[in-house]
Length: 494
Image 1 (cartoon, rainbow, N blue to C red):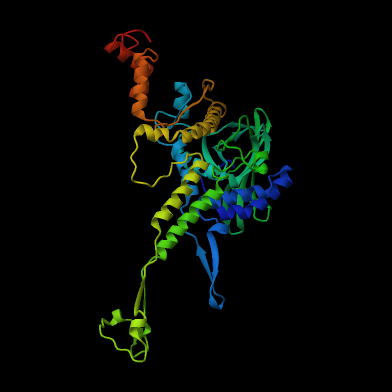
Image 2 (image 1 turned 135 degrees about the horizontal axis):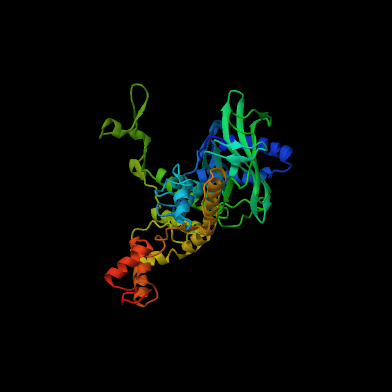
């Protein structure tokens, strides 16, 4: 869809209702489409991410007379928490992107965080939310939306006023062709709208014709699969010389053969569903014990009086202290008041819940001690960092996919500026993404280690200043020269 820039939306019910219509339309017009079972798997992951997987979290209880009550479990919502934590590790306020060229950095990224072609419109904030959904559903796409497009007589785009990125979740991505495990042709349900004539989805089909030719065709489809007219100002078809989408998945292989065959990824908790169940079972048991744990007092019926309306009144309700009973019963043979205090089993429930959290944390790549609720243990920063080495290894693995994805966006932004904006820009070299790893390491220990390397002559002092003082190489060398006259602490050249 080449139109006004969109925003990230997740409309579960509407998308699922439209999925079959989209798949049927793609089979009819493109000759191929992913199987519907793939989107059933995605919806199951989405339900866990939302925190309510009804086949597990909801049950029915039957009472006398046939009455049925819907009972919902107490839940911790750990699937969403896991994805939020991974998004916080991969994209945060310290994440940065550079191309190694000052001119390219200025155009694509800008002097300020939101000043470039890529980083406009709260790019980093939206990217963090996008990564959370990608880790939940297994796949996401960034689709370039062009505005003010001019085409030649053959339908090839020759200029455009602006480019914006729309982030698309897995349930609105429909792969059509895969090469070497990567999606190269794909359809995207970019916008779903309820109109007076029913629900309409705007479908954008991106087809790779050859290495430097991509065709984008836009459709408006009703829920019955029929085509509708496109909105005013939206082109039905155009070609460009570079791809207008990039795919991101967690760096784990899917266990689903359908997902692998169509280039889709796997949810970060795809193989931890039993552990999610275990956490919610333990938490539900804990909360139920608290709910049912209130004091209960049972009293002999002889202590209960009736008011003039026939309502039974307990002794405490009338502040009465003297009671009389008649009959042959022996009052001493049966307790008049029995108190029951249900056990809360706090310690056992806490231990069970913590064990389940440890298993879940281990399965999703955080290591076995990521979620700890014990306040009786104090650890040093070095110990804290050491316990997170498992998470660091998984983060380094996910960094590979994130860096490739951001590199694809940088290439897309440069191609837009050169091809459709007529800008003279240098070739795109190696794109470097600086991920914040302070969560995994002890900053003081790392600084002390680097300082020792400077003193041993293994690192130049200007490198130390660039890393810890935020100076450019030229400024750092100038400062070292002014205070020491050389390249090391002893005045030698670095």
